[in-house]
Image (cartoon, rainbow, N blue to C red; front, top):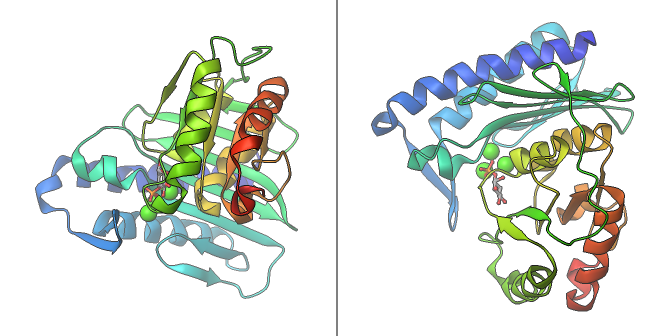
Length: 267
Ligand code: IPD
Ligand code: CA
Ligand code: CA
Ligand code: CA
């Protein structure tokens, strides 16, 4: 395993411990509202601190961008870690056992290393650029479905940006005619990891953040999949509008979405 991936795995497992301890005593967890329907708990923050400490301890000259604490570490570095300490906070708070830690490393603006860790199931999804994607050390691949027929897709609802609801429901209705079924499990990082592992055939969501996407993107790509924006371009880390699947399914997804996209979603 690449030494930087190894450190990221150590950080993710340490955060996993913090999160599981919090999960055992949910009555003691303190939650704040960031914006409508969007929460953060003391456990999100504690897990993030453990991750940042582990990474900066090993690489003090790297820079960090993390969901809850923003930018830290070195001001300028070719190495940037992108961290979501707890993806699926709402599930966590409600006692729904489906959430993950997501850590990616960019080197000179290219995704290089990635970890998504599900502490409940002890499932570790990893990838290093050019070296494939793994689940607990075993190679994973996206499915080889030729089109949307019979596919199982993952998605997320635009609960933080409800002005996108008309476009979302129009896309959903059109897609639903063509696919087998859809899931809304509540963790974008795990949705992407599951695409990589072939547990679902594809994923789409509006308005994600870089820390929801970065690790999953590399893992999907290294599993033979494509991650792109709603027009098949490369703006998804900025726009947060993400499609992921094998190349043929991605093409079908993007094509089906086109008629329903206003200007804001065409990137
Ligand atoms: C959220 C989850 C969810 C997605 C949201 C994200 P968080 O991340 O990934 O599945 O629908 O858009 O914000 O806030 O729990 O880290
Ligand atoms: Ca959040
Ligand atoms: Ca997230
Ligand atoms: Ca989070």
